[in-house]
Image 1: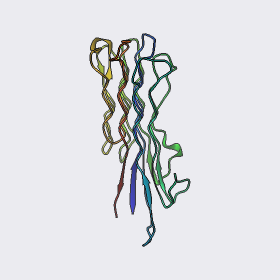
Image 2 (image 1 turned 30 degrees about the horizontal axis):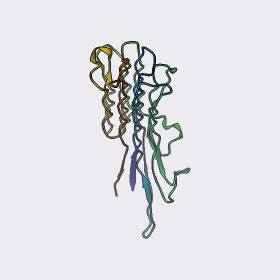
Image 3 (image 1 turned 60 degrees about the vertical axis):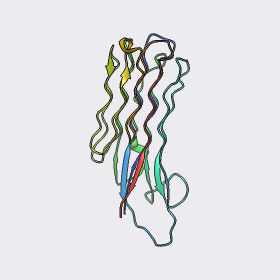
Length: 212
């Protein structure tokens, strides 16, 4: 039967102690396979949780990566093609950290069909980046927009994926970044205001669909 796995998205970055916003969280990956089943056999699944966004302006970053989603014949993360594994999106860095691609990189995922999530948008002196979308059933996820003075758009997901959250800019300092959408969208990055409003959006949980 086919097992369709999507991992959790990464949380959005918080602002840090600089004048920069936070990077958007990365979107989760997608894997699927057709696997045989046997009567009387127990199967195990784990739905990856989305990472939480950075909750206060701080250094180091308090945002967290998402978690992997998997299906297996044993109660452990699969390492062979007898299971299915989708890789998580990574957290967005804060404004004091070096920017890096944080998409759900499914190179180490397991499945006959695999797609990567989208990267979170880069932070800027104006504000936080939009979250990356999760991958869809037929293509990679899309990247979030870089931080701007207003609200930075999250990546728009392909069919079957979840959109990335919106990043918050300095002119919208009274507004929080928004969480990613299910399944697996990355949270938006925070604005660059060193206040309680400078928090990143949470990444969305993953999803597993089993059909037979």
